[in-house]
Every structure is written in C-alpha cells, then in structure tokens.
Length: 208
View 1: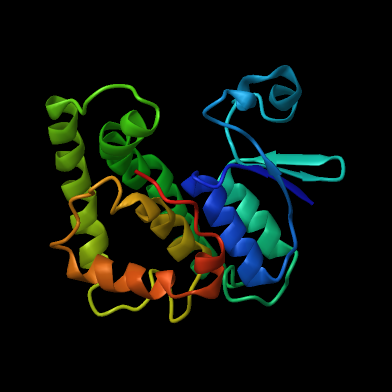
View 2: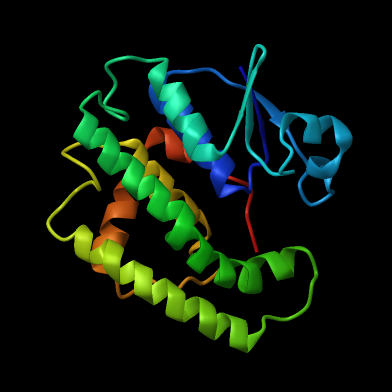
C-alpha cells in the first residue's frame, strides 16, 4: 500500500502512527505540499481535493485521513485501536468527526498565523486572527479537557484511533505556541501519546 504524504502534515502523521501501531508497512510517497505537488494533474487524479494524505491499495484509492485509519484498522481484526463493539466504534467516530469539524479548524487558525506564515515567508501574524483562533481553541479545549477528567484515553480503557486523530494536531503546539498550558488533562493525555514508539518514529523535522 502506498501513502502519499508530507512529514509536516498532522493528517499524514496520524495515518503513519496508526499504521505503525497496527504493524502495517506503508510505502511512503513524498508529496511536496509547499511546492504545490498536490495540485499537479497526476495527483489530482488520485485525490481531486488536492490534499494529503492519500492511500493507494492496488486499484482502491482512499482519501480523508480518518477514513484511511479506519480502513487500515479493518485489515487487522481484533485490534484495540478500532474495536468491534458498535458503541465503541460510534464513540471513536464521534471524536474523529469532532476533530475534523471543530478541534483542528480552531487550532489551525493559530498554526497558520504563528507557524505556516513563518515557514512560507508570508509575513507577520495577524493579531485579529490570533484572537479569533484563541477564542475558538479555548472553547473546544475546555470540552476536551473536561472529557479527559479522570480518564487515560478518550474512549474506553485503551488507546484508540480517537486518541491518535485528536492528538495529531498537537504536534504543532510548541512551534505554533498554542495556548494550551492551562489544560492539565489535555497535557497529561498527550504526553503519554508522545511516549509511543510510533509517535516518536514519525517525528517531523524541526519546525519554526
């Protein structure tokens, strides 16, 4: 299976982390996102959104990172990342949907201003956008922090795809200066994920 990816993409990283945890070898195909390789006709034939990651499994092509994670987990029956229990799967899917709809878009505002602009030489951060991002981040960080009170993982008693999906964007928290220091439950939870061998093996080059 081929995974078209970029090491600085959190969406790509979460797929790589899941694959390592599942013991699945992926043929990593580098896509130079800053150079616009994802907009080239050959790649757009695989992923018309012009985004990464994209998984190619023979004639089957799949995009959207959380869908790819679920597909990979289905290939390893009996794993704890994607349990067979329907309620647990629904709960994992709930957090993966929340990540895509609320969590990542909120943090992405600050990441763009404090990190992406610097990397791409796009000028200084916009204070109004930073304020907007901070307000959105605090709104959803409080929801996540409250949920993690007294819990080690987001769903059940073991690491699942939900944890990987929600934690992935936090790979930027230091270089992008995300305002999360006050959320003890979030910081304790992500610290244990950062200790995973799969997380460390997928570490990107220094950012910022």
